[in-house]
Image (tube, rainbow, N blue to C red; front, side):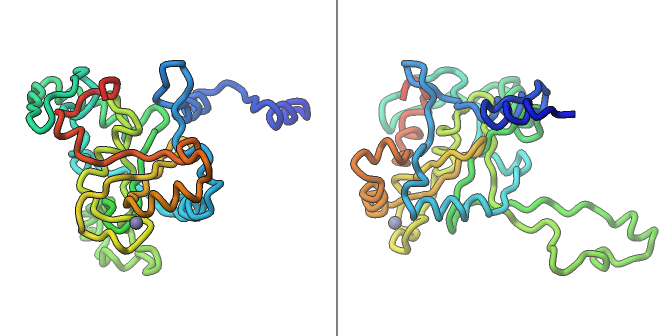
Length: 261
Ligand SMILES: [Zn+2]
């Protein structure tokens, strides 16, 4: 039984009983990167001040997402992670040594843990027309259907397509940061979320990244739309909106670790 004092505490001080689930959720809500002075890196902390971005976030939060299976997450590899603490190599001449079998196996287990728990899940979602979709495979019902002699889709309501494609939520596994997953997931993105001018033109150079609890939403942005958004954000746009660059530097320099970027 919760007492009135506890309710007041909860409202005013964010108090809660200690619980494993609560701790996991809190942990996933914490920043995963810090500046040298110890302050947390937040993504677009004042994004709601820009009406266009605020509307995009409303749409983003209402868009269904799904954590895909491991084969759909090929971009997240041990060679591209922070593991190994690689420094930048000469631009365009980088050679990344392939990981050993045991390193790959260990990373695969960590990636699996990042998609199945047990701890709170930190994810990154890329939005827009070319974003990766994933649909959960239909369960194999043939054996039971044959026994029951019913048509497999006879009982599925038409209004609810089972296994419908949803936007991929990339997990942030061990060895990665939210921004690092965002940069990798953006590789090859050739659309601007905000306008129709940038379509299959070339790799999109920027993306707006907005934090929402344990999920970071990413909106590919062309130079002109970035200028518009920066203008709308006021006199200190870098304090309002956070952009990641998508210029191929990471690939060209051998995917150096975050702290050497
Ligand atoms: Zn644009």
